Length: 341
Image 1 (cartoon, rainbow, N blue to C red):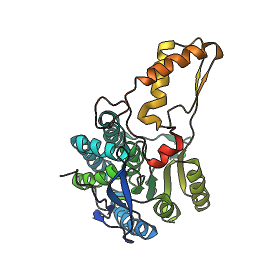
Image 2: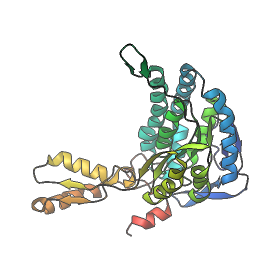
Image 3: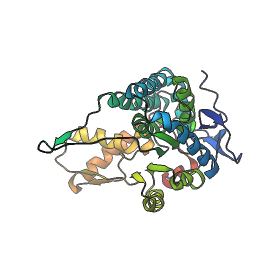
Image 4: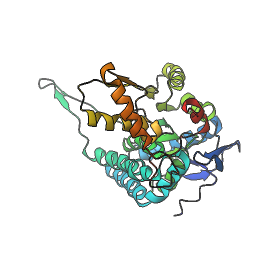
């Protein structure tokens, strides 16, 4: 299977790669060069309605499939992600701007690990029971909820996309997933991998588009019973306001970072390594990265001098170059938000 032909991305609905019904597209930009290298669908409520129908049809059999059946398919997806690691890593770096070595070392391996973890987990699931003094036995019965909406961010595209999808599928749910419109490439390639792995049509539907058109349609659809979202606090607040009155299950991981707090009695070398790493990993575009540094006054000058010296040694360059420690920030909008020139 050729995973490098990604100039024009399509939706994955009902096991088929199709155009958006509206025929509207968004330009896909390489953040390292600023060049347009493809287009992605800007799907809307009509595309989501089509995906819901496909998921409803698939849920009838997927929800009652054996755990071993689901294990085999999800584990096969994990194996194929490992097989296509070079193509997926290249796609991730082209789309996101992170160094290629980072995509190979972290993002793509973690995506396969996500599928493998939940695939094996369902084979060993157990639940407790409680006896009622020779009268009855109470036990917990866990069943798939139905159709789940998964909306993932751009900073760790395939890594976090699979983190949401894999447990939902493993539990017997069907999924309608929207990757970030800024980094859609590896999600598109994942749809081809799922087809090759034998995932039944309609169990996973990957629909591309922006938040106002595509994401909002997922959140508002009455037949989508749960929403998992990672992104901004502003978007999360809107999602909660729509989903809560519909009594949907919600998982919201929202924006916001914490400072590094450094005291004079710290392990100096460990602190320095950690502070540099937590400030600039993935171009600082991770929720685990510190947003600011608070330093005890007595060590401020020493810290400042050494921190600046270490940061100057970080090589900012072409994400495809193995010597680059820093690649490109994900988009022009993001660059203008926090970069000082």
